[in-house]
Amino acid sequence: MVASATTPFSVLIREASRQQHTEAEGSAFMGALLGGRLGVDAYRRYTEQLWFVYRALEDGAEGLAGDPVAGPFLRPELARTASLERDLTHLHGGEGWRGSLVPLPATAAYAGRVARLVREWPGGYVAHHYTRYLGDLSGGQIIRGKAEKAWGFARKGDGVRFYVFEGIDNPAAFKREYRAALDAVPVDDLEKQRIAEECRRAFALNTAVFRELGEEFPLSA
Ligand code: HEM
Image (cartoon, rainbow, N blue to C red; front, side, top):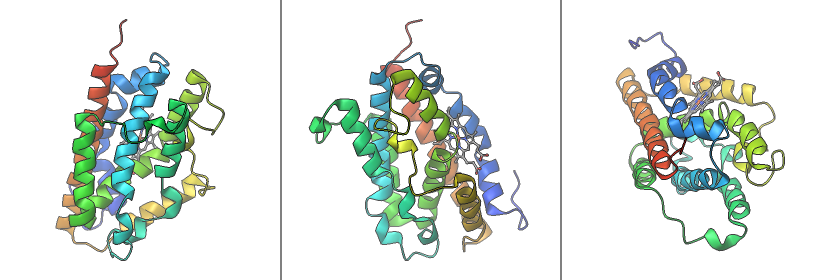
């Protein structure tokens, strides 16, 4: 899409990543996971990858609280690390997973990129924030329902807490506010283009993780 001064940034960033969204959604691993064709071990491995990514998104992000670009997006009700840790403790049957998890190479690259942006580029951080949290509030809800059914987790309980935003009663309203914050982001058009480009990169980093997960859990069919 061609950027113009009149295109709201929330529209620009969504359109800029539409193609990548379709690719991520269509990844073989996601399809197999959502189709109930993989075991809970694949779901656990996927959840482990998310833990590395959200730690990168959330550790140290408080340092961005006063930043005019990234600050408005840092909402405590979005934080996922604690929920992921409860899910992982459930999925591993105890706390033993702590200190022993190893990220896939694609996950290490993804988390490394995010950790760097937390320190170096608030606008780029916003691209990653958008890609994950707005996605979790959207398609993430579909994943929760499938996971509960496929592997027998309690509804909104341990195993799928990552997908449950206890502090957000109305996700649609929250997403509207989030888009309004995107539209108000105080940067020029060139920086908006850079952020949109980083958003495409964020999707590509997710797709790379799915690819490696797909290699680790090939479908025998
Ligand atoms: C099978 C997997 C997925 C499904 C079924 C799915 C589904 C959806 C749906 C239905 C929406 C639209 C919600 C709305 O209009 O309010 C959405 C939005 C979104 N998804 Fe996904 N998605 C998937 C994977 C992903 C992945 C892997 C990412 C990135 C990591 C992602 C990021 C996003 C983002 C950022 C939005 C918000 C777009 C916007 O309105 O600006 N999604 N997703």
